[in-house]
Image 1 (cartoon, one colour):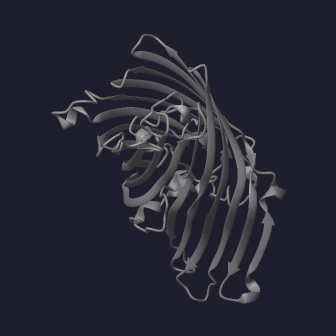
Image 2: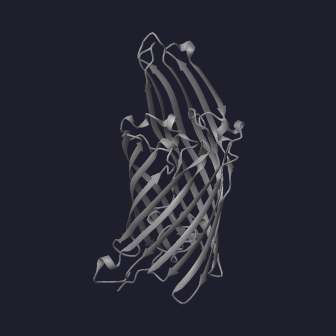
Length: 420
């Protein structure tokens, strides 16, 4: 892996066309997005067992029923990241700013509710260059670059039974483009440059189920168990592969096939969570998720597996997350900071693939808060994240500092106003 990525850090990348940037996004469909809104991410990304009537929780469709009656909720998120890469004595820095998610939620009938929105699933962004000298051409430069990503449109509904058991179902439409290109450029004009690339247009449908059971422990506290399952699904769309040699038209070759012919799949995902809540003051949660991409067949198709001399293989990914939030006094009328909600969390992620037999792991910590705005439950959520990807000594170290902003909108529908 070191040999493949050597030279990637020769210069900083600041191309704003990237939705994400990491040398590890060269593998598979790219780097999977952490998911969740700024509210979830401030607590390390937990949410499978969270029920909160002040925020939209997009990590479990069963949680959509945790709301005040006649309430309308919306969330809009932005995020930025500064990444620092290192390998030996090489260094590089990259900065990005993106729109994360947009979601709306409202009740339908009695104990049922609905939500819909859009969010990113994966990001692809990298540019890796290696320059070598030889006695014939003096200098030759190999470059591989990629960009793009996959997004998800989703709609979910949930229902609560006996005021304790909530179940939900979610339908997703996944779509996006991923472009990858490799080229060899010679300093000697008598040699013809060469290039090859893959363009992937991805689209498919998937489904997710969720449940939550809330058990009161006292008049002020409760324990909630949550679970989600996202079904594995076939990848549809188109795969275009091309090869070029020099600038001669007869030396160009382009082929297009449908991805359904290649029997590709996105992995399924199982998640479980446990949370404890004390009134409106405190919540703590632990989550575990497991994703199985071992049968995705991505290692058999160029565009997903053309990663140089390293051995790429889809596998089983895991994630462990924990987080807490605390509000000193939500109804304090004298001190604003006592009405602010404070959050902290930590996580460990194991990648859904292996490189030369080893997973690429990530460890991170998060902090966040929500500033109340105007009335009801409107607020602005802010979060910070500090993480490192590539923990093994032979892997490129990617340390990043991220921030996210979420705008939480809350209103009451069909409210009858008094008149004097």
